[in-house]
Amino acid sequence: MIVEAPIVTTLLRGLARNPSAPVEILLELIRREVPPEVLPREVQEAMLAHPSPGIRAALAGNPGIDVDIRGRLLADPECRVAWRAFGAPVSDSDLSTLLTRFADPSQGWLATVPELFGELGEAMRWSPQIHRVAAAHPDPRIRRYAAEVPQRLSEAAIAALQTDPDPEVRQAVDAAVTEGRRVMHPADLPARHGHAFWATMQRPLSRELIDHVRDDEDALYFVGTNPTTPPDVVDELIGHPSATVRQRVAERRDLSTDQLSRLAEDPDAGVRTRISVHPALTEEQRASIGIDVAPDPEDGFCGTWDDCRHRAGGRIPSLDDASRWAGSVNPLLRRRAAHHPGLPSDAVTALAGDTDLGVRVLLARHHPGAPPELLLRCYHEYQGCGRDRLLEHPNFPILELADDPGEQVQRALARSPQLPADRIVALLDDPELGEWAASNPALPIAEMHRILG
Image (cartoon, rainbow, N blue to C red):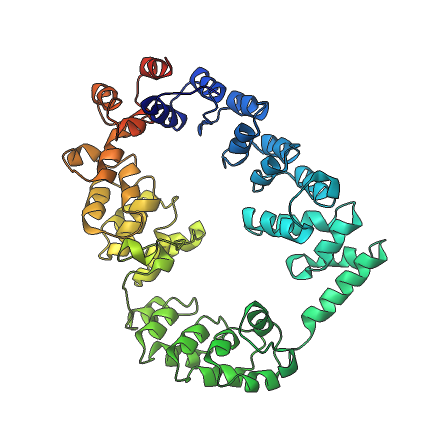
């Protein structure tokens, strides 16, 4: 292990993040056991072959590695390396090999098979690929796992498991399918609210069970969107005293014209806001609904940092939906549209001048073509989560903030390629900003070598 002086160590960490660092610099960082974040193919191969499990684990945890490299990491003899490699993309063949290791106790996993599947699911964002590959796996123990969760399989995969040569697999899938179709009654409901309670409320519901929870507002939250809830109960819930229950019902896609109208006229702004984005409404109908356009952490647009420090913001819609929503009268739909990085230039121009701050901020955060004046305006007007990331946008006119004393601004300035090279080099000696200057893609190659000594 090479021991560096503290200032050199911080500079090496900066170099490890520098997207312009040449391969020879990155390979030297690996030799010093400083895992680079910029990974050309040659560097990936070097890290993969490194004797240190820490270096290999660092490679495995990088989301930008090549698919075949990830597959080789999944076969690493060190389980902690393979564990870090969980995630997409991965080929079906490599995933199948990994599942084989799950079923082998000699591999040394410090977890049960269900726990490993849970970790893999989280890492791969519950991709249907997991259960599709498991359902066709040569090991019946793995197929049996897939058979127990038919709700995550295609009809063809379920049919194949129902004729599986292994009787335990056939029994498992038949039992799971039968159980999944079973209508829930009051006796099936756990006594206390918890995971099992909420899972039950998302199963097919009997009228008796619905009547049993009529006074349980938390349970009605799930009744409101359950596809087996009878139409007359849905109609009744639209008039429920709880605005939370009414908001939940507003998410149903099978609402009648009359039900849509009633919810659009609801006395609660939250209910009206929720129904205002319903796909069955026309733009003319949306325009007539009074809604709440306050910051919403679920959009990724927040009033303050504390509003969403632990929240994931905004899903990217399809380009067709985003293009359509960009011209909506409803600012909430325009906010959704602003998440799409592929919006055409005319939509970007329109949304950049939107009257809604949320639309402007989300466009500034997510679109690579966000105009410099929009980025600067949003930085001054917005105080919520993601504000500092505006500084990292390549179009941000960063030099206009050169005298700003804020720590985030100064760090962004230090790593901005717009900064003159002599100023970047000067910042390398700054104990607070040196690491950020070392990560600047405009740092001269000669200075990178000087850092390495």
